[in-house]
Amino acid sequence: MIDASFVDMAVNYYETSIRPYGIENYLFVGASTAACNYLNRYNVACYTYTEDSDGEVESVFNSPAFLRKTNLRTEMILDALLAGITVLHTDVDVIFRMNPFPEMLLSDTDISVLWDYSTINAGFLLIRANERTVWIYDQVRKTTQTLGLNDQSALHYAVDRCSIYKYCTMTILKTSRFQNGKSYFEDGHRTFSGDNPCTNCVVIHNNYIVSKSAKIYRFKENHMWYNDENNYYSSKTNNYMTFDMSDVSTVEEQRKALINALAIGYILKRIVILPKFQCDNGARFCAMNSLFKMSEFDRYFLNQYRESTFLTHPLVPPQVYKSRTNLLYVKLRPFVKSSPMKNNIITSDYILENFSKEQSHILTLGRLQNFDLKFIDIAGQNKFMQKLEMSLHSCNYRQFC
Image 1 (cartoon, rainbow, N blue to C red):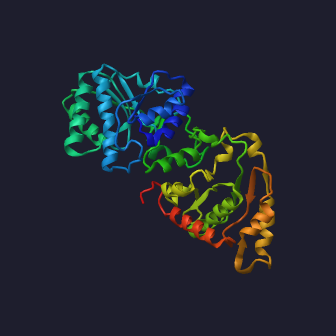
Image 2 (cartoon, one colour):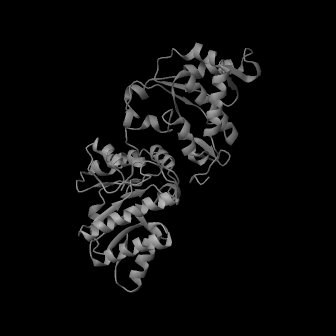
Image 3 (tube, helix red, strand yellow):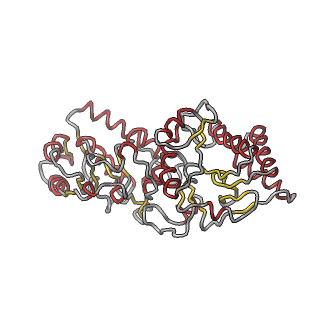
């Protein structure tokens, strides 16, 4: 089930989990006409179930709008069960590594569910259509309406009541093969693509992290994002820049280097490829979401940056990732150490004069934390710095900030 605010993630789910495995018995259920119209552009099957008042707005986790939206899926599933349809319900922040149907259909229990450490995961489960599951979802609907619980808590409560009296049966899917976000990303130490490959994983739920921006960014760093809208990966005309942060460990130094990189990218009209950041005083590499709030960063810099693993993504054309130069690194480093630079300041005019004509798709920068960049246009600099100040909010890995 989707609303218009998550259609980009729905397309990614289709591209990673439906189309590659030839799954045809699927249906996206829209919480708005706009959501289904978007998917129809990709020839993806979608049925408009309702018109939610907040259908085009991302809702904050556990807010009234969030609870109402998640409870819509209870109504949707109950309607399907009453029609005699066995449902494999999945959220769109789920990734299939193989077709889950053969393994899930081995069990004949009423419900087969991905486990969330201590509770049922309402975002991925198989519900067989019978009078017992109809009773369960009717109880979920009543509980969410009367007690204000989210559907996952209500579902756990209903299944517990049902199981106590041996009225219904439930299978917990193998946790080594069907993993929640904490198990896969955190416990599995998977921050970037290639980290500790899971060869036996069937399904991965990108939960235990807050905001759509953070979910998408984590997908991207792990090469789990294949929505190429607006040629995000496949563009042959975009130009990029990278910068070195291997010897930077403090948060303030990393913030300074990032600010200068974004400013140079803005001046040269190049997309900034993020580096691997450093956490725990340089003890380990980490992704940007460990230090900064991704939803705020996206508010101001969406489409002006790329994840650190971008250049190794399979959809990036060879003529892009092979077109590199160290020219900026070579020219900038001597200038930083030379006498013409007063008070560790580099000007926007210097950047334009020396590097604006560079034709390579990728410019490689060196260390950027040891100088200040001054715009000749003071008003433009003040506006850009205000934008930076609003975009770089300190945060933690799960984005509770």
